Length: 504
Image 1: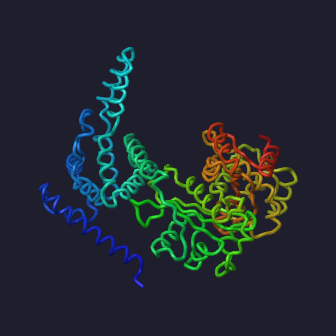
Image 2 (image 1 turned 90 degrees about the vertical axis):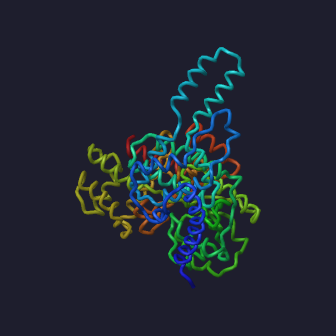
Image 3 (image 1 turned 45 degrees about the vertical axis):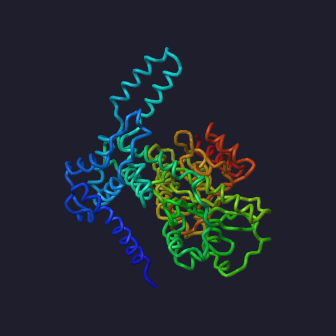
């Protein structure tokens, strides 16, 4: 069998040469000498960038001719795409900075129209509305027209998704100090949100009979619980499992967001029973044993679609699919990891040690047990020993230590999920996602993920976010509008214990 990288390289080469024939004609018309310099990364002068942008970014039509101006030639889009791909990372930063700064909004025109709008506030409504419409149009960046036209050429939408991924990386790494880069990201996000609206997405169930290329990508994109081999992948799309993905016509063969579901008798409290259950590999499904759907992994595959809501719609669509297949099913829940808990915990322990408040974090009896288990002295030595245990995950190897730390870590984790906030919303990104969807913070599970990754990230703890379908709309509104987290008695009880012991 031909290896996938070879197939993809061949297909990519065919597509590239197909585009290349178009480019040759376009470049001859533009009197450009040769085109081989687009094939490999090159260093380009600022003047070269300016020439390319001046040629491919058409002027924004006037307000009066905005619906009558002919579209620019397709060669403009192709030239921009191939030129950008030819740049190295550093030149891409300079190129996009120049695009966003020099071909963005005409700020002078906007200021003049804004003043005109203020002058016309006392005039008739029709005049005010017309000036407002002109102002809206003048706020359109000049490069937006180019982005729109790129989306209409082959592979153009995928190019723009990847382009926004580059822009987001520039913002995160601060490789460009230009504030215009953020405007470019916002413009791209707005366009992508329109192109990837839920009505244009297709829900696909992935099975072992799905194309190999799709299965390969499902395996590669799995970000929560890595797929170990083909046998593992076969199990995750086999009996008592479901795998769904959203796809888009403009990006064929490319799953955008992927959801893995386990069909179980009860809501699972341990991920190893799901991802390493070999007994289900060749078995037939017994409908009588399927009472719950557990969403154990959801992965967004395209960094450029960050902020474009897809995952929440996917869960809702999958719930409808499962209800249609299993009308008796009434239990829907996630089994979610808690990324960031361990690093937050280390920060809390360091803070308490620095402030000399270590005794406030655990009860007197718990500190005695920690001292005995770690053979350390009271006070700072015991706290240091605790920090070291958690950072090395050594405590998982000793039953006594595990029993000592269970109540401590469970209530600390409950507080991290429920009490730690960012702008009033849950600090933990996974919690924030499910709470926005209207789920209930239902149950914390001890030793739910004993893999090295699970222990390192969240001290083996996982959480169920339960979807009570008749309450999700109300819960979502409470969270989004009033920042209220709906939680079970178990979670609230652990939070109360943390507040009592930590003397907040």
